[in-house]
Image (cartoon, rainbow, N blue to C red; front, top):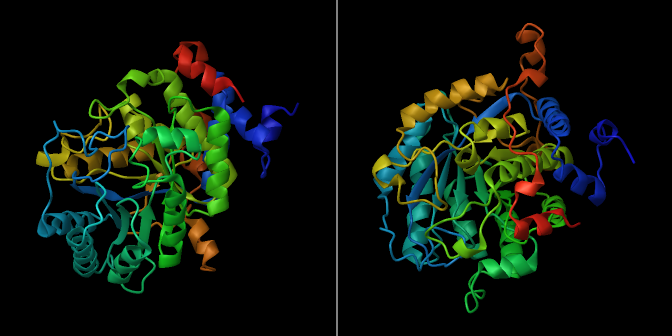
Length: 416
């Protein structure tokens, strides 16, 4: 068998290699994986972390995904909608505070009033965020679920000709059986496995930079399933990934199925991020806010494991508590200004810099489009820190004993 160090020096990985790396639990082995992902990020992507100021503008949803706290049948949830002006003001605030990009997220709807509202918001944001620092305005990521190709095309056209539009549509899981369990009987016609894949293809057709991802640690999920997720991301040739640990929601319908214990779940999620960096190499990878629900420095740990995107929440504070997809969502009581200052310091402690006033398009996207690729690492990180090693980055790993995982999930996660 190859040594771990030999395995981490590879550029191509077999399924067996991927499963082995995903299953690492020994602290020294996990640190080697983290270091390899961090170093590869520095070399291929650079030392910049880009902000996507996320605005959760509505928690109304027509779907009933069992894991989700804002699902249609959660009658206890107070629903809200931001006005166009509120949403655009949030985007303008982000641009004025040097964010190069915003992300618009909401529950899933397909009615014409919703489609037209988003279309108008895109036009307004593109027009009102132009400045000397952002001469072409802010870039926009949409996370609004499955839509017809015609809707994707309308939203893309609203932004004009610039390659500033991204779309994040998580596959959730590539295991068809688990996917079906996440969506109740009689509901699959609204959100079917095949339609999810077609929607990702339609996004590419419509001209978006395409992002996807999954939930890590779902009940019944195996390491082989996570490996299959990574292979799917490869086949779809995605430009960016948004993944996070599966965390229960009291507003969902999966409380009886449990979740992995916090330490093992965090380590599994970090392993997945690092392995995705090693396999997919030059894509953008977001450090999900859900990581911070497992550890106070969860997002920083994501950066240390190869992430280069952070999504600070700039939703107006009065409604932020009503957009809880999962329990214990962090940062719901902070003002946007609090998050901006706090995050920059945390990012610097990870040996990274913030990419202010930049769209932060992935190197993968630029190569795919035959555009120039500049790796924005202006400093030698180790030299800048007086010879300190990247191994000195303070990373608190989760529990390394899979025995602490619940019996039901331990069996499924370790069989491969």
